Length: 69
Image: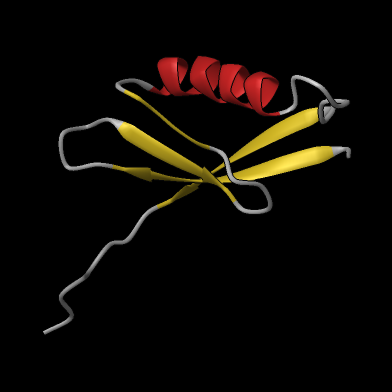
């Protein structure tokens, strides 16, 4: 498996939550750096008895509502 993709959303408190799109892996972090570290740890734990992916992609999703009137 070459890559895992996580969909990341920023919470109202400023922290981040990440959900893998293809495996049952969830993680979070108070900062982007903490999220990166936690994503690596969660992936390693999930694949503890199998080959791990080569890369992890953190895809930040952001909703923004603009007023045009």
